[in-house]
Amino acid sequence: MPELPEVETVVRGLRAALPGRRIVSVRLGKTDFIEDPAALGELLPGRRIERIERIGKFIRFELSARGAASSPEERWNLIVHLGMTGRLGVHRPEEPAPPHTHGFFDLDDGRELRYTDIRRFGQIRLVPDSMIAAFHDRLGSEPLEISARAFRRRLAGRRARIKALLLDQRVLRGIGNIYADESLWKARIHPARLAAQLNARELARLRQAIRSVLRSAIRLRGSSIADYVDANGKPGEYQRRHRAYGREGKSCFSCRSIIRRTIVAGRSSYFCPLCQRAPRGKRMGLSRPRKSAARR
DNA sequence: AGCTCTTCCTGAAAGC
DNA sequence: TGCTTTCAGGAAGAGC
Image (cartoon, rainbow, N blue to C red; front, side, top):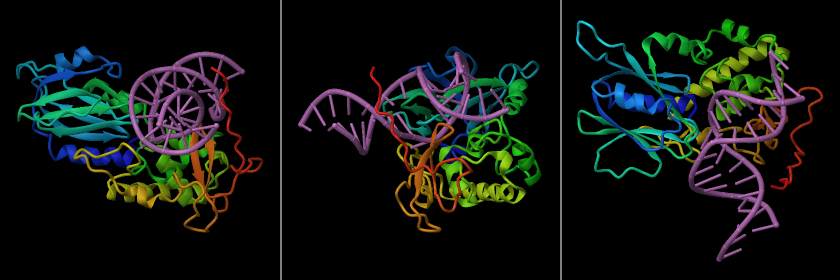
């Protein structure tokens, strides 16, 4: 699924095609992942897409006001989250839409902004300008913008595992499973360490690792494992630079140890057992008895 | 506060 | 070959 670098790449692609375009109509397929499907048809037609912004893993389309200049209606924002398999792209109507395309936003230049999402873990909703501040408040800081001091403050004293906190969008917004593992590998910190036990040096290293990993990933237009492609249908290249994620059994780029996989915060977590020392009392993820699926 | 487990959904790959 | 199980870039909610 798309994390910050992938969403940033999609946004940059959409910015090249959409601002200034007006939405003329909306057609929907399955709508169980849309907060208020009827509202899309009522509120979107006639509005122009003015700006596109990434907020963590969310994409915000800022729309123009509608109605008389003397008493314009409230401004709305179309907010999209790609979930695990969501895709956005601009297409000509004669191009056949792939299966699981559930949103068509017809534009005034004859093209269509399309939303495709196989698993439908994505989200589409409308948020009025008056609620945008509250929307931001529910999320943590942008990992590429947060200061070293604020980063320390966010994690200091937290008894949770560092990986769980990196994945928590209320702490930092935009990091997911791939970039959490890549950043922890680079910072040489085991994913199961408790944030409270990380010293100032380690925290500084982690922040730098996150910045460097995310920046490189954006430069390479994200990671494509199975589904992800950018707004132009092009896959990313950063998967070639992965040092931990998905590399179980392969040798560590730094020390040649064998990369292992364990479960932390309920997610597959890849790490180097030598570079990333396990916390005391935590066994290395060598033997992980796989639950022999119970009945049912 | 924080952990694990479950759920949402579909499809690919691995297992037997 | 073919059926079954596991797993997947996310996230929220329940229960402990």
